[in-house]
Image (cartoon, rainbow, N blue to C red):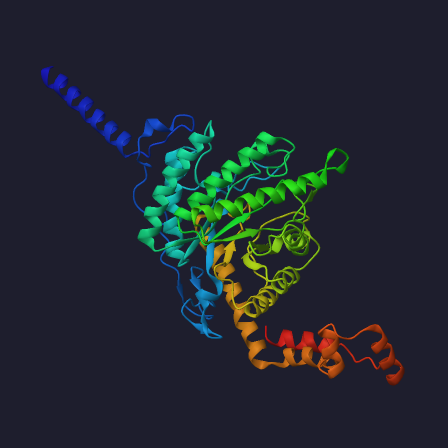
Length: 480
């Protein structure tokens, strides 16, 4: 009887011990409304991507999906290393905050490190995952929104404190990994307070709150060594002009950006300020519709020396342009600063943020980038997300790999076209009539109407040459 009692006692003690180990070993979760209970640890040990090796270049013949076929970081093309032409960056919000949710369906992505909360400790865990990801991918930069890397608090002070804590960890991790911030920004579109806009809100208190949020976001971007700071006016626009004073709103936006320039200089931030054009969505009409509209706005308010443009290819599509058109518009105005490398679906009428895999489009993009002499201090940010149906951790890597390989093929093709010279010669010949004395006078603004009328009478009916569009397309296609 005594032996049976001792056996039961030992079994009970053993069970208690196993239970304790299970509790200690289990991932700790922190309720979003009470993150302090979990202390300073993010409750995660080991690798986030244990089954993914460091991604390496293996060449076009490789069948390994976790390798680069065309992107060879150290390879020199047109006198510059591939990695320096691109300066690739991972977008934190899509890669680590994307859930696969859409207006018709719940989230589909449940990464192993997520605990279902938006706690401070969960934010730290995501930040650790971010740096392991970009290190294995071999990318040098990352981008962020303030509210995506740190949870919103009940007050501005609490939100700022949360951001400071996560940014301190980010600084530690990026120093160790030798990574950098390509750009930071403030999320001025998600919270209900921004329902009427931020800098263009009809409410003065909202305008002031947005200014305070940008002030802090600019400070932490500067602290992390960010090379750019982006303004995306997600709700800076209108749904109807019936209840909108458009002139007043645009003037307010200009005052807001002027204040941002002043604060940038005050804190000694030397990064480039960027405006990201988008025509619509979520508003019916946004004030930074496209590159030309944004350039006109900057000129009107004397801000062209203070800002450049962050061109997103999917936004170009929504504005009725090609990405190539938007890049060239920005470039010839001296405003091309950065590219959000993504694309849309021609059969879907909204911003789908897909990874760019069209080699022809990538080649056109790289023609503009080469003509621009590169993008530094800007780069290529993958503002792109996995499809809702792609739910494996491995898919995060594959998506970025195919995006980087596509851009690398675009660079190689563009270099071929430039080195061959046939396309440039075709363009030169098309405008060669202006390479004359009269043409030079016209381009110098020294040819008046009377002089040109006299020449017309002397020359007679103009002879108009072929544009040779099909030949241009043949030359272009031969490089793909």
